Length: 146
Image (cartoon, rainbow, N blue to C red; front, side):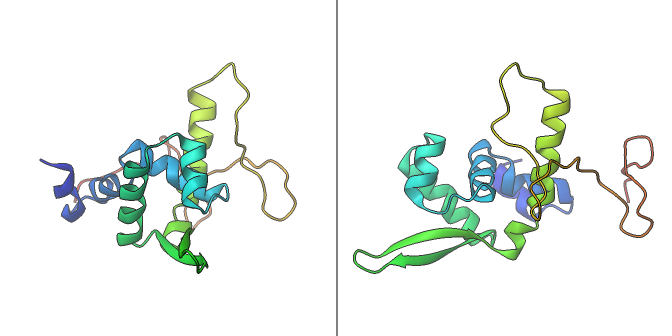
C-alpha cells in the first residue's frame, strides 16, 4: 500500500498518518503552534529545503490544516496560519510532547514546554473521556475492531 492510498482508508489512524506521518509535516505544525507564520521563519527554524517546505505547506493547505494570508502586497507575500482543523491538532501535539518528555529522555534541556495559555504555568496534559471526565490510559481503555 502506498502512503497516498491511506487518505481514503477506513481506519482513522491510517488517515491521520496520511497527513502527519511525515517528520517534516509534524515539525512544521510544531513551529506553527510555536508562532512561526512566514516561509523564511519555517525554513530558518527547521533547516528544511525551500522545495520540501513549499511542498509540505501546500499539502497542509490543501488538507485544510493551514491557510495562507497575505501580509505584504509588493511583492506579494503570504504567511501561514492554522485553521480550526489545524488548531484541533493542538492536543495531539501536546500529548506528543508529554509522551516524548516522559518516555524518550534527553540530557538536553527541552526547547519547548506545555504551559497554560492564560497564566503561563506549566501544565501536565491528560486525555480524558468527554462524557465521564475519567482519565484514559492503557489500563482504562482499548481499541476494538468493528
